[in-house]
Length: 482
Image (cartoon, rainbow, N blue to C red; front, side, top):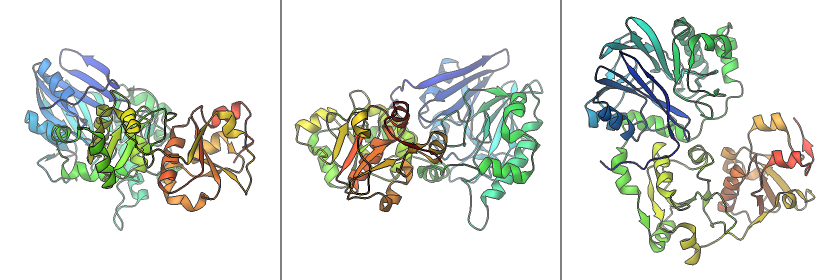
C-alpha cells in the first residue's frame, strides 16, 4: 500500500482511555471534519473514516487491535469516505443505519441495534433529517450511555442541513426538516445530560449553517445553548434552520453518489495521479483541455493565463468545490513541497481526474515561456480604492456572501455576486469597464479574477494587501449598508 503524504493539518483531537475502552478523535482542518477510532479489548470501530485510511490502520496495529466495524453516520456529501478500502484492508464490516442502500456489501443496522465491541456496545440510533439514513452511534459502557457520535445530525450550536437529500415528488426540504425536528427531540435530547457529544464537523464546514467552535460538548450544554434544541414548534424549527442557509457546494451531490456507489481506493489513485510532469507534458494536457489549478498564494510574479488560482492554505477544498466541476481534468502548479498535499486534498473530496503537477512549479512554467495574463493589474490597497467609480470606466465587484454584506456593508455602488455564482451571473458584470474585484481578505477575489479571465474579461484590478475590512477601517472607500 502506498501511503498518502502526511498532512500537517491532520490533528489528533480528544483522547479518552479507561479500563474498558479507548477513544481517539481525529480532526482535519481543511474539511472541518471529525472521525473517530473506538477500541475495547482488542476490537475497534472507526466512525466516518477519511478516504486516506492509514492513520486508523496504523493506530490499530500499534495497539494490537483488530478493526471490526466501519460505522457510517450517513452517506457523506462533503468528502469521500474510506469505508470500502478500510473494510477491504481490515476485514471489517461496513455499517449504515436503516433505509441505507449501497452498491457494495454492508450491514443495514436496525434502529436501536447493539453492535458488540469488546466489553462495550455501540447502539445505532436512527435519526433521519439531514438524510433519511442518518444515524447516531452511542457508546454504551456497563449499560450506561457514555458518548454519542452525531455525524451531521447535531453539531455544537447547530444542526445538520436538511436540504441535501431532497427528492423531487418524494422528499421536500420541509419534510426533511420535520424528520430532523423529531429525531432531535425523540432520540438525541432524550440522552442523559452528561453524555458527551462528538460531532461529525466543526466550525467552517458547509454541512451546517453556523457550526460552533470546539471538538466535543455534552448533551446538557447543547440543550441549553443550541438554538435548534429550544422549545419551538415544528414549523418554527424549520424556519430557523433554513433561514440564511447558503447554497451547498456543487460537489456535494457528486460525493454523495460516489459514497453510495463505492469510490476508487485512494491507494490506487495516488499511484496514478501523483505524477511530476515536464513542461512539455504539462502543456500537452492543457492544450487537450485540462484546467490549470494554481495554488500559489502570491501571484505578484505573474498570473497564469487561463488558470484558476486557489491558494493552498485558504480553504482550498471548499473553493475548488464551489467553482470547479468534479469531473474537470486538472493539472497543478504549486509552491515547492505543496503539490502532493494539494492532490491528496482534492482526492479527499472526489476530484479524481488529476493528471499530475508541473515539476519545478511556476519558475519552470515562466522560464519555458508559459503564457501569463496581461489583462489583470495587481495594485496596492490604496491604488485599488483610489478611483472614481462611474458608469463610464470603473466598477467594483464584491464576491463575498450576502451575510457579510449585511453584517459589514460594502463599497457603495458595488456589484455583489457571491463567488460560487460568478460564472452564472456574468451578464451582471460588464466587460467594457475596468472591474475592481474584492472580498474580505483577497483570496476569493483572486479566484473570481481567474474565472473572469477565463471568460474573456480584459480589464481587471485586484490587490493582495487585504480586502473590504481594511478598506473600511482605513476609510479608503464610501460604504453602503443594507
